[in-house]
Amino acid sequence: MLRAEAGGGIAMSFAPLTHRTCVLVELESDDGVVGHGESWVNYPAWAHEERVATLRDGVLPLVLGRHASDVRGVQAELAATLDPLGRQWGAPGPIRQALSGVDIALWDLWGRTTGRSIAELAGGRTRDEIAVYASSLGPSDVTRQAAACRDAGHRAVKVKVGFGRENDERALLDARNVLGDVALYADANQAWSLDEAVGLAAMLREHGIVWLEEPVRGDRVTDLERLHQRTGMAIATGENVYGIDAFRTVVDSPGVAVVQPDLTKAGGVTEALEVCALARRTGTVVNPHLYGGAVGYAATLQLAAHAAVVGTVEYDIRDNPLRDPLLRDPPTPRDGAVALPSGPGIGVDLDADAADGRTLSVMTVA
Image (cartoon, rainbow, N blue to C red; front, side):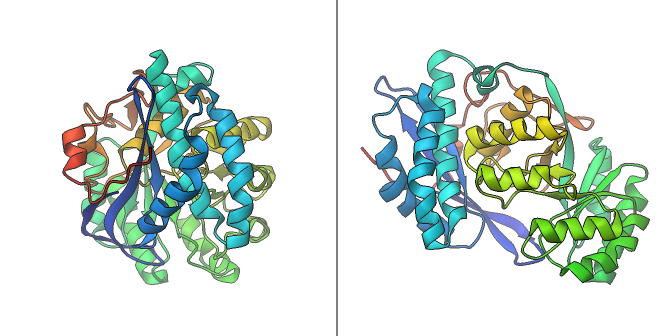
């Protein structure tokens, strides 16, 4: 488990994020090759303790002795065995987040064993770079943050909303004044009731919001469809969706314009590839959610390198000691795009010394 302070704290509409935290999964083959995965544990503050227990007692015993090249079979077996427990527990998210770490590690291990990138293993690369959008502006200090995005050449930016109409409008106005004619997105993190979201739609349109992420509490597809029908707003969702059946409902919905699977939450590379296959059928845009550490970032770039349906990748502009500092030669956006690594597995290598410096606990399962 890795943890580092989030410089100054990061405000969300539902709770502040005081620390960057992630659980790394390392799977070692009999001949000593290591694959890395990441499980999302941003919330709650004690999530890493649950995740370690779930991995140790529930997930890893089912993985030991399997072949990395059978990653899809392993993921299917893990889901079939553990998803029912998640439903009974009332916690499908933590189960899927644990599976995500193992799935990404298996893809990375398979790639490093064969000398091929995840994109190549998934069927081949379709591009060498992908557009990014700068994420996590606001709710305060937006003018300075937006200026940094402008100076870095970002062409699309997402602003946090859900902090009251006056604060939200000021943040969007500050962003627009500094950035001018760039694509502007907004993320409410499920802050509003349906009626509240409808009431704010005119203000959001006035500031040129291209799409609105997770506007309604509960994130029910029926509510998102009603919001779209009543306002015409383009809706994005998916970071808190678990299971391919649930994603199918989202992708098939006329109210959802953008689907956002998170590789460290939804079920890893395998689940994200299935979501992309659904989205190709319907023409829905896939913009993966990305708000974690180094391995999740690298794996998401591999998805983008393979899946043409991916439109853009989220890039958190806040200081993140668990992302770029943990990678050797980290992929860094320039002029609104990032080059997609082509190395084996996740495409880039972890800096072991940097990771050790942020490690709070280690568990070994043999």
